[in-house]
Length: 574
Ligand SMILES: *[C@@H]1O[C@H](CO)[C@@H](O)[C@H](O)[C@H]1NC(C)=O
Ligand SMILES: *[C@@H]1O[C@H](CO)[C@@H](O)[C@H](O)[C@H]1NC(C)=O
Ligand SMILES: *[C@@H]1O[C@H](CO)[C@@H](O)[C@H](O)[C@H]1NC(C)=O
Ligand SMILES: *[C@@H]1O[C@H](CO)[C@@H](O)[C@H](O)[C@H]1NC(C)=O
Image (cartoon, rainbow, N blue to C red; front, side, top):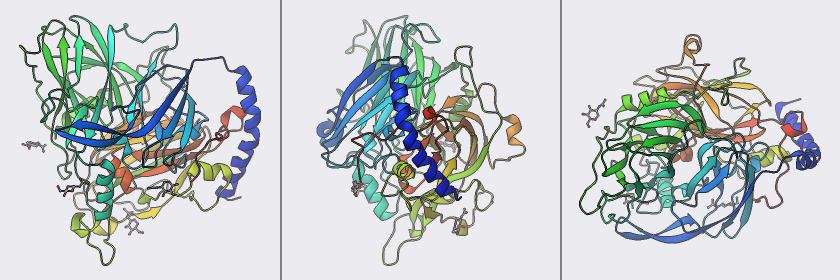
């Protein structure tokens, strides 16, 4: 039997078994809280940086609504698309166990919700506490369609740290004066890199370092001598950010809604897609302090927005008119050592209540390159990428081509010809991936809709090898449907014999989005215990648009509770 026909069989069998499972589940599941929300995706007018502009929002808000739930709760979110674009919502970091239909990436787990259409996402929060977020997963809509998802500990349980006095979500974003969808479409047409953003934002506000933005500044009032939990999300499209608070250290306690060992620092680095929870103790002199987010760029060949966004931490009893805020010492945008030191200092909490469980016996061992490339300019056109060509990006030399039916649906319903199952387990050509001068004959990847099939419950090790094709840079790789342990990273080319010796299998950080360092590699491990079609991609949206992605197709297990649920009644059709 070929892999494809075996898959179809599993898909169909899964369908039969699921009816029984749904009934059994219904009766046995202990009731948890169910939260109902309505998201209207709509065009709203906002004023930023001296200009009025129409943007696509959820419920007219930028950022969109923050959802508050407890670990174990269920969310039911009805999304009405009243915007002139196709839309979906991805629940970034939610595992969607058996509910892959609600994951959100267009043409991977669903067809988009077309203008005028609706779709209700239903899913539970499984074994997760901390900060996640939600965002559109169509084109660059997520620039303005995003918000936080705050997950508190279960009732009658507490944080693994003292209860904070208060908390705030800090969503870092990226703002364009023009329509972000036009920015990416223009880049795809011309083959060049997209225009960089015009501002960074904190909770949708550029802050008073930008023109006309005195009032557009997020302010956080605090009392002296207390501890606050700040939930930081990087919702920027293409930029890693340094975050600092003048004259304050803070303690990192979680990343991507997984608790970490407390780590004290005065700067954090956060990549698009990541979240970081910090405890801030207000032990400085009573006063006003800037909290800043500034760009971190791992490559001097890549253009980026060099501006700075700031919010203000305001101690009670300070006078805004008398005291101008104190400014932090900012790291240089190219400070790779600060970024590396932050990233590699994180460890999972690894306590009795929050144990670490790194897979030791590996069944699927994949090495994939991640990086850029160039496509020749079509005859008769002019292209504005390097050497008059067009930018592209790939994993293992495959530049992912979006299908027109969702991969999950094709798998589940046995629709042929949508994807192939031959994503390579290692780079098709071995070369010096991180060399200064990689031969141009290697620069052009192959387009394809290739997925990697993984048997249910396999232990997976996936090594991402950055390449220096066109320009090496950091790639924040995000896996849908899973958290993974980051067991190692290094510079240069990964050595499958020597490097695993130094892997941290004791207390590696657990996350859903990890940096592959510029001209280096990162290794992750996870148990494939969640059936579905899971997007694995670079969370720099420009690279995602160029094809730096693939799909992990995890088969149904044998047990009724190890198989996908049936698709919802209102599932969008293409
Ligand atoms: C991108 O930048 C160029 C040069 O400043 C400008 O002409 C163009 O209109 C911009 N495109 C968009 C979509 O904003
Ligand atoms: C970083 O940028 C600064 C200022 O532009 C420059 O002087 C320095 O050489 C750069 N450092 C590296 C490692 O490229
Ligand atoms: C990618 O595949 C193309 C087409 O076979 C080939 O020309 C190119 O050298 C390959 N590049 C790499 C890095 O494997
Ligand atoms: C919106 O989705 C429909 C259905 O998949 C598709 O036919 C159409 O091309 C999409 N529109 C855009 C602008 O991508």
